[in-house]
Length: 206
Image 1 (cartoon, helix red, strand yellow):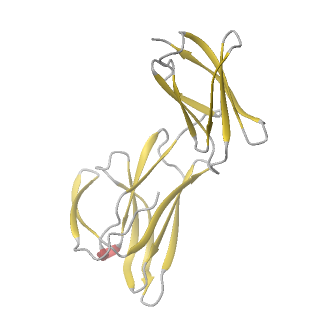
Image 2 (cartoon, one colour; image 1 turned 120 degrees about the vertical axis):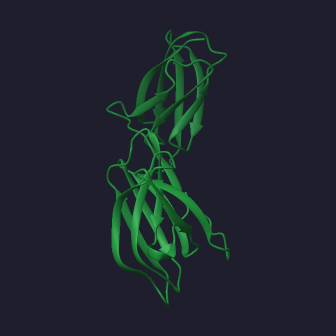
Image 3 (cartoon, one colour; image 1 turned 135 degrees about the vertical axis):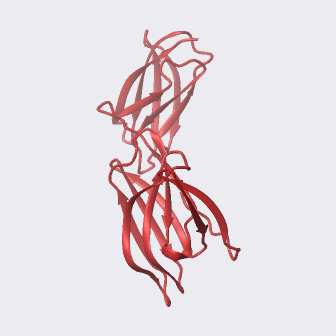
């Protein structure tokens, strides 16, 4: 997710609560970009400080509720440059699984970034996660597809009858189950070469 620039704006004061203590921080416009990506259970933070802007050290903060932030890393020294853009990367090795992680950069005396967020799922050994299961009117199957490749989901009833197919380029598939009979269903998710990535079962109860 990319945090869009707000152009030439006045500094906006935000109230952020960190470990129970109120911290006044200034939202700043010195960043050209701030993006988050996930791979192999880790979160990669990338940001670019625009040309002509500097800051005295950078702290990386994380939250699961956008209110209480904790420091998970720090880059010491002067950041940025007076003559060219400078890019930085930080890897969160241990993000909070199965929740949305919110990240904030504290850029020395130059204020803070906007808040960026991303969710990372613990797929366990099965390679997928279903929410909710049992399903009532709708359920979502999550699986590993960080490269955003094309995948096909096929859903069968317990008796082998095909009841649903769908294509996705994302890391999840939504299934509308309100019109499906109560029972046990099996599914497969296959890649572009028809190789099965994951297979499992879902229960439907109304």
